[in-house]
Image 1 (cartoon, one colour):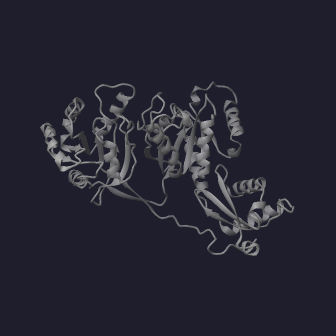
Image 2 (cartoon, helix red, strand yellow; image 1 turned 120 degrees about the horizontal axis):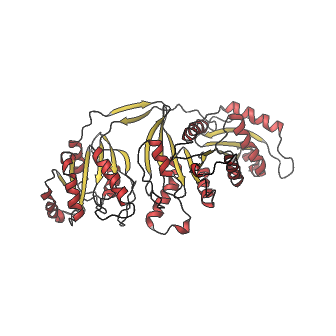
Image 3 (cartoon, rainbow, N blue to C red; image 1 turned 180 degrees about the vertical axis):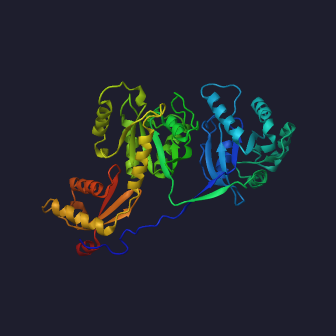
Length: 467
């Protein structure tokens, strides 16, 4: 095999130090539904993170993000909470309870109201927040123009100080609000921590009601996601960080993905779209499959999203505690899964009960193992020596339409593991031989359990000769 030229060779990259912040002040957005909490959250964050929609009660789980405080060099933890309601049904009690838990922990509360009206919910919530007045800013939203500023002062009778009138949608007076926030926060305890290793990002995906939120809460050791039997409980991406055996892990709980024809409203559409998009932000995908229900067509589609992005997938047979205690039950379920996922027979399968806490150790050990494999760098010389040996031991088919020669190969990227092989005639390489090469890459270089992406290209010399 010929050696690759310098600009085609994979260059090892020394990992840059990773920095994260500890003890950041916690700022919580609170208020009744439809006062613009999620719009302000996105505005302060500088990007669209929370789903915004006129439908009341869109936000359910608190959404927590780190961001820079506008106009300053400081950073904060910003939380968007669900709306406070007096009359409650369905999940409302859980939503309110979760919001109040964050308010009790907050270093600063942004109590949001609508400039155009004061409702009984505003009045009751204001009374509940009075004990926190020393760490509260009253934020009067939807003051879209100076003409509406006079309406703000009807809210002054609550006695909260300071008051800031803004328009989150139109970016009005947001700098003034940020200045007030900076004045009320203590940044003296913030620490910058350097780590030589990046956090591992895992996405928990699957159909509704497969135990995704229960697993997130079990991993974080706290009730971050609302757990309910109602399908579609999780809407936004709920994110949290924890440490596993000294390794930083960021976990993302996604909305359950139903079949397209069952997605009938805009809010669920946005939720599902974001869940699919989170695959590209993750290093590992945990696909939750209801052990009793078994594999569905929707599970296959979710796995396909991950494989297309080159992400390792762990099949988690969820709610395993509900399965009958039969000999070889797991082996039978695993074999059935691998039969239907023929192209993903390499992916690990784990029996899991997040509710009982069983299988979590094995799950997280597998996560760390797969991440190590997906970020493994292979020396170009060793790669080409191995391929030369494989080709000699198992030559490609010989024939007028199937004749080709492998010139050389490079590892184009890690995480995902992507290889480029330069051949005389890429179109002549049969799918079976391509699969053979991918399997040899896995077994030879310890890449078992993860997807391997292989691209075939015509080498420069052969391209010139053919042209």
